[in-house]
Length: 361
Image: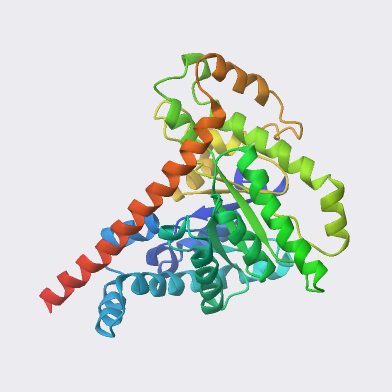
């Protein structure tokens, strides 16, 4: 049995954190589904930016849409929609077989809206309608302004992937927004089964403290924070509040491990995959990490439901002068800023490519 399949056997879904035309056109994604047990996919503007920069698969579509008068942002969403619909169709059998638990792809709202609640709600609803796929999540950041947007979108029946979460506290805030949306649907006699995932970013923790942490704590902070979040997740699933909603037919918001590629060149390349195996969670990873785990990864002990030694590890970092709470807030702010930078770079890339194609024409 491949180790990717072994992760599936313990109840964890493997999603690919990438999408390109080559993945779709050359059967690579089909291969990952068949051979590596991949059951979903995530995307972000940086992924599309790299795809456009590194090839010419989107050139015709860019030229055609710009010729029709589309803005650079409109061009992006149309390109992304086209690719993600194809991916969603590949995962439709998984989505059907699991009754909507798995088989999802994700598209995010403009990062420029991270601190604008109303505009986030409007764009999320519009993207959901336009995508016209039952298995497509709309990604909304778990910022202070994003939380009420998450609640309102869930209440509206929009499946939401909550992104930019960096701590158990931020996860709990996102879970609370999801629960409020579901509770409102039940109160109004609506179907409470609106899917959602909460995406906790892992490796950015260790990158942020790499130059400050003692050597004996190297590459341990991200996993410790993930263990804290997993404990909060399991406590929520065991809570009377959730059990009442489950009795009404609600679906739990699944916890997703994001940013699981290793940033430290001296660390094992599958560090976060092996360390974060846990039932009813998702690990989304880029191609290289997926292939590495399929080749030489190993499923070891599962994450402990009680958080294991996470408190002791966090305390050790605190003793070394690293405040995890303040760093979580900083990482979320930096993440939102990085997404904006990537977004603007992507739109510039589309505009530049259009100019190049116009000149060539």
